[in-house]
Image 1 (cartoon, one colour):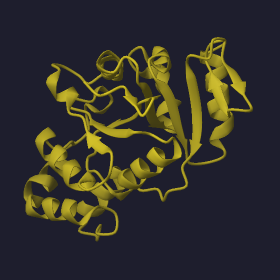
Image 2 (cartoon, helix red, strand yellow):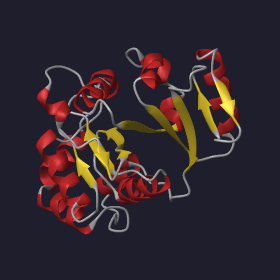
Image 3 (cartoon, helix red, strand yellow):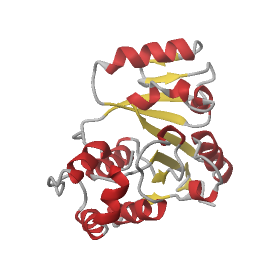
Image 4 (cartoon, helix red, strand yellow):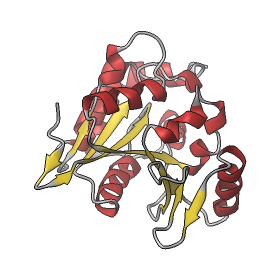
Length: 231
């Protein structure tokens, strides 16, 4: 179990999940940025083993995605990979992942990081509207236009939520135990979907993925292309 106190303060753990199909430079930059922005003691990548929202996607095998992710984060301080979703049978539900984190680290502060688009679809997730009560949500906003949509979604689905102007954070209950904050994402935008499309077209993706990741993709290019071309 992780030590829950470091020099007299509670450990702050960030969680960022996804298929990472494949991991790219945007993921690395995001991890470093959020870790510094929120003063996290640890930032965990949590690769999905069997993502329920992407059943029809052409996803690389778990072991290969994990190897790519390991290469990408190697050398990054206090950034690690948690493979807990591979230890569960069935689909990888965020509810179970957050529950596992809370059980293992009962006194730690858990921050669940996700994009604004994902947050706005939270009501389609399994018990999605209960998830912000299991960890503090950190919503990565790419466009200022998303402000209104996020605000409307919160007010519609969390009627007791109130915005604290001083702390620049939403609280879902009067006791302020359950927070939700919006963080502007100033990083360049690149998606795994675009990278897959470029790769299949034979276009250069060397500026989009870490060098070691690109080398692995090239070594296994026959299998990679076959899987990514599958619909």
